[in-house]
Image (cartoon, rainbow, N blue to C red):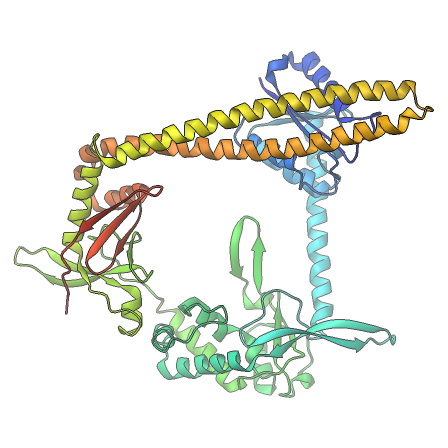
Length: 552
């Protein structure tokens, strides 16, 4: 059994529940209750860090090691050594429990290996859940109050607007600050164009194509995508808040927090609570019934009738969906790139005399821009797939440059690891020596508390403590590099094994397995109109001349 001990103290005092005392008490508990020997301990120390949050270097390392199942039990002196926040503690325990790690707090006799300990944890979790729900309710109530002001609450502003601070006087006569959306004219012209073209083309794909062909880019200077175009069209921030708009949002179940009389056509719409964001999933839009809609302090720029037409068209087109045509025969989809940086997608051709389906890889930018942004030659996919497989077979041979490169990379990593291990050993020795020196100085200080030397002893202790903190930071960074290097070394071993078996396995696989196999060993393949460059793991690359077949 392996035991982790975590100790924390906000600042050094040399007495009471010091780092050293906490560790020793935890060791005594582990020895008495679990029969643990000195070699079976992992020690994590954070000195000079508050318990108000979990942003502490050794605590973060502790949680990483817990997920790697390096130890079986975590022991601390008191619960507040982990965190003073009930929610943080509950989240920490969830991580420990999900990885099969027990938890003991010796001061409170809080041991999750006992029924009473688990009951205590359950109570803690209930309070954490209450804290979360109360916070969410408080945020929503606050959002409702702020919605009445039409202010901008922060974050990335919509295309066409910037955030501007204004001063206002509240009902009590006190001067306050708030932010509102201010128009950015050149961006709003693009927004108007997007609405006009969508109603004209009735297709997001055609609007995307139009913008790309005319080199019209977003405010971040990147090409518009169907998703970004749709986000603009569906955002009520652009709509003029008039009677027609009020009727539409009421009829469609939006939660409105402005009176009908305020929809005068002078302002735009603000919609709060639109997205659901949490640490475990990507951002997604809530149902419109959960949105909080109110009159904004900004000016709307799209007539309500135009915005409503766009929504009806979006809803109509939603049922059709956008499905990219998949070619089940192509191996290189997802790894083949054009020299311009865009993906190359399979495009179907006719069957040959043997009944084989012919297809070509075509640059996505070439297709979207109608050749105005890229006009690179297409390449015959059937032939390229075979050539790539044959080339990787050659690279997989034991005497190939790739195999030599793997061995050289492993030697370089092992050399770096040896140097890191030596430095880690030296730093750990320095930490131990500093700890002993601090202990001796503390002992000396206790005997000379009232002497003039006391001030100098304290200065020495603080200096050693500061040095130890810096060493621990360096040690943490080195261990992270050590772990990354070990992961790279393991990856090289896996890659070597995969390449060794490639020649024997690839011809027995179906298309899906071959495609998945290629994505493991090939980072990308770049087509420049004449050559296909295979870029494998690391910086290894191989070029293969491929005939520049053209479909047209």
